[in-house]
Length: 158
Image 1 (cartoon, one colour):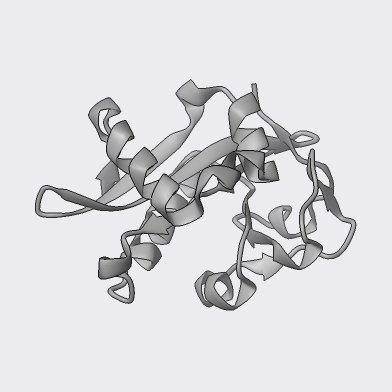
Image 2 (cartoon, one colour; image 1 turned 45 degrees about the horizontal axis):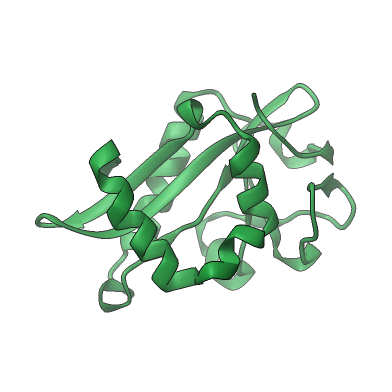
């Protein structure tokens, strides 16, 4: 697991396209990423030898004065699933967010998978995103004491 390089972008964009298709750009999480300062985003990739087999991005966001990140997309090549690559990418994101003194990491995803990594469902109505989201899929990993009680509109940090 390592920080992505500019030369990795075509490979992880192809991975995202295969995994999520063209509709991925309409998702609320993508809207937040588009509005954020790309220079502050953190992208990590997983390699097996020289082959890029997974990627994940952290996008800086704010809830009031709280600093947080939006995680995603987390993508692993299907042939390399069930080998711990997704979990390793999640751990690397958590390490980076903690090092930057973030209060929390938010994501829109499958609770059964992400709950194994410490993510919890955000109580209904507590956090508002700039677009539609299934409230059962909005999850948070609190990183500080205030991270578990954050509320309000989640916006891209600029």
